[in-house]
Length: 495
Image (cartoon, rainbow, N blue to C red; front, side, top):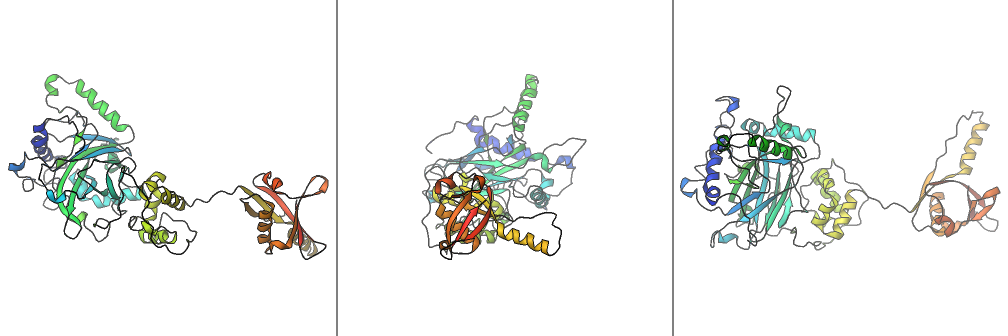
């Protein structure tokens, strides 16, 4: 690696202690539910099953090929043989450094190649894991359009082709080169108290896990061969809540006696994710094409310069339409093609309308490059260039004929309803105004001889470019037409 990270733990703790502490800490999880409340034979999740099969004792002291470091302090109120606990603020970006710890000659098959990492935020408590699908669906219902886990793309470095499947709110993935500096900034948008039952007027937040699974490419160009997995325990609080909780834990520890303090771990400046078994394959292999990568992917690299992809033949000119949050991924693909963004259709293959509309201007520019990014962002937001001048006009002759007809029919006219038409001007010239009025009257612009504005004492002032440039925006005029004396053209008077 081009840069090294000084870790606050001793080597022997990193290499062996954390794995042992991790296994030991999990043995008592869920005891509050009562013995035998759940049978783990029913649900064999990697967090709770015995790790001896995947982490044999003779390999406990091995140096792992990869190491992931979450740049957030651990809690000081954790006992020595328990797993570390890290507090995070909702929506705040936290860096996770992806470190290549391979020895010389180790895993030579990935030299010069990319690997894929899948990030997940999952439940730590087994009772919530049994109902994970229902819990996530309930969260989706209460927070429409939001995700549980996001990547802060502008802040991340070295990640390639990041993806977030719209159907998996708690999962993101990307490619990266182990030989280069890679840091990914993640944001967790759910808080721990959103999944707890109210007890005695208060709530106790549930812990989550951040798990990272890394894969290498197989012979078919698919990233399915497992290389390494690691995870850590977190709790997520409302903004600034994690800082207050960290301070509270620190103050409590300061009040304890030296003998009591010996039973607790110190607070470390960073959190090292400990090795674990890979997440069950069924959750990341599905029929959707999103999780599969191949060597011919269209990629971009954050922090190492981006450009617009090469343009391919485009369909006919776009239809002026707006993308809706309710649009399905298939409808979003059709919208991209209609609006001449087919180059990026593969990149946004599994994005729904809500996912695309959630992208910020910086995100789109980072993904598509400056030129296409700004164009796509404006199209997503349905932004039209505001005209330099807007005026409203109605036809006086038509309104008077309507009133006269009502009088002749003996109707009582209690109120008058005038309909105005909006005219938008960009060039602010008399010629442009003539063309716009001709369109309004459904006649040729050559049939409009002169345009006048009625001035003081009823005088008729010839409309000029300078006069139009001094019109107030959203001015209202009543139009009157007069037949020209010499030909079949008309004079128009703005009153």
